[in-house]
Image (cartoon, rainbow, N blue to C red; front, side, top):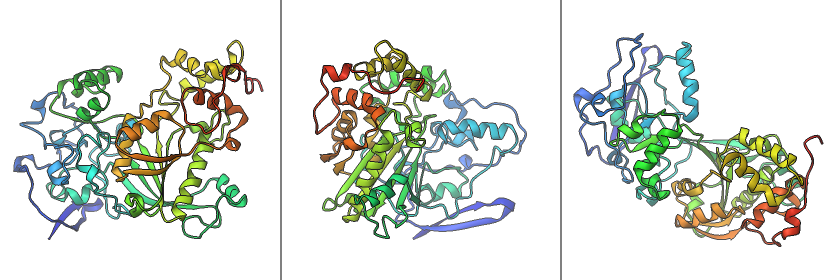
Length: 455
């Protein structure tokens, strides 16, 4: 059986496509009066507040979070075409929503623009996996976010504006260090996974955060009311629905998302007989992009890619998860302030005060809170990781606490650590990060290392 999704393209042309369906049954009716109709007042300036249920009518389309059947789970509707149809708090694009607002305000973008999703379907199917139907396992992304056009074709036919929160494509990626690895014999080009010029062929997925608030609260062991009120306060009251709309349980937060890079076959990710390598990497613009040597971020990212290529060439898969959590989620301004404090403190830059200097500026050592991180691994259907390329005790604990087994942990080789980064790596080893070598003693931790600010 098939169903059609018909939409109007630019210039008034109508485009229809069909998708296979097992069943057309919906758990809830879409009432005729709820069908989306264009707003005739193109130039209207009045603001429609969404902070109380009466704005929407009886109820928006429900979201039964954790249901394994997408049409029974229901779509995540965070668009602004018709405020009555919204069933979430927040909107798409994370922090980029502000740029969308600028585009609308300046007249560069029509506020009622609807994307044409022709040819945008995922290049590789991912899932569904059993974890998609476990409401406590995935709480920070929409597992059906890549297939909304297929899964919710009936809603599109009725005029609903539903946007993907996941996009899956293919690409070649290259870092100069990979060619060096080939030259030194750590890697070898095979023409399929690793090309002669050093390119790695990958499948990659971009993922926007979609938070199921009851599940997020449970993950952090706080009550949902406390979570909602704190989110409302700490965003400067940006989202009043957090405290006025308890009927809305899904929130699209204004933060960066993540990108997954898959080396090798997507299908073998869930095959326990094939090796699976995983590197979970948090963004560090200075090192990852510009090769700053004050930390080990880029060297570890490159090492993770090497291990992923090796696993793929052995018939398995490698996965890099790249999360937008700059400066331990404290932000780059805070990170640079800490750099200055470390270099200027009495006694010089040393491992024993590495975390204390961060806490003096930020009030906390780390705000990445890895509790939500395993969700993307469960979205991929991962149940076991053979090679976990990370020294982080927090990441390791979060993964195993989520029910995923880890067989081997792979630290960063000593010869990949920049001399300037030993303050960081020694402090982390002393704090409990995984290492196969000795943990620095008190003398080593108290020894100043690295350059001064004027060097």
